Image (cartoon, rainbow, N blue to C red; front, side, top):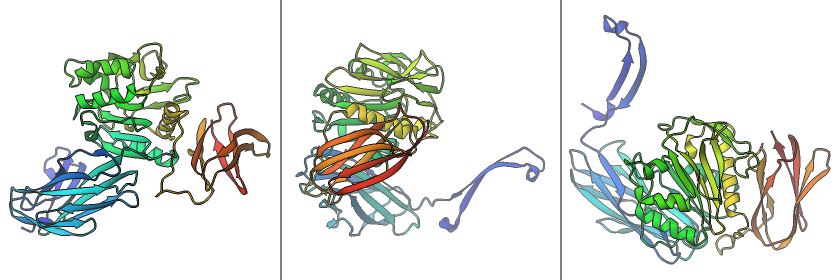
Length: 466
């Protein structure tokens, strides 16, 4: 038998006699994988939040789970700032990223491969990926990735606590509107006792379906988040069943009840709300005009919660209420936005997730000045970007770059050329800037925004759809 030429077909069909008269309802075809050559790779090390002068080291275990001995080609790559370097070490030697090595592994045995990421004094975030390929089993390939985020020069930390990659619901919108620097890590990075997170102006936490495959929180995570918020931090949390996993007798995170009540400023009401249809709060800066339903990414089971204390407010209700799913809170020291659903669950037909992320980030970081200056990241020209989202309702973000310190004027005009409003009129530093434009008081239609910065002038069109 030639394994790589074999396929398996699974069919669901109606009962009939003879069998071939039964109509096929569904069928799937799969490549039959040989048990002779099977391999897995996994990181034994957490992602790292560290100084820009300290290399991060990671242990990767490559295991031969096949019936026969095998050899594997190893290659490592680095996606990170210019100036960052990396190397990997096998039983044979140490190699720079981009060079290929081959390792022999007996059936049932494993080998350790050590990865090293060196920021070389440059701020930022990066991800190293180890790829392996069997030399004897065609198509037997795999990869594992680890991340490093410097604790200086990165403004926003994105944490994937879902273990399913749902933090991409945060990073994708950030790529479109955020002018600061962000870094993304798995939750393992926060499972270090006494971790100092005060360098970050904001943390985003994506819990996914909390409590299903992993607890909503681990003790070190809660301790580090509480210390961060005590120092004036800002937190965006999204995920379903967070309250259930903390307060129900079968939950795995009952130690986090004080964190839920006093730091998220929420009360747990019930383990499931009355519907899967949600509505924002009129005039709320985060959810005004928002209406959506959920989709079945996983079993829909969102919590019902309520605000705890005078500093917390409802931002999302089930249907027309009064049952509550999401809140925001500002106690004068820290801010929190807590969505009792995962953003990945939202039936997103009109950029709802992008809008919720952008509005949440704006509310959490309002008044915070981001310093983007870095020796390895210099703005060398003037530019005005297309607003995002576009079309928009009712708010959008306008981003622009300045090559030097200069007087800046940013205005909005209607299609007749009449000035609607002046957004910016001041001297600003060289670098990247953004302005969050709220058009709640304007009618649907086409508008223009004009940037004047010294001798640089640029005009772009945007569309408001209500």
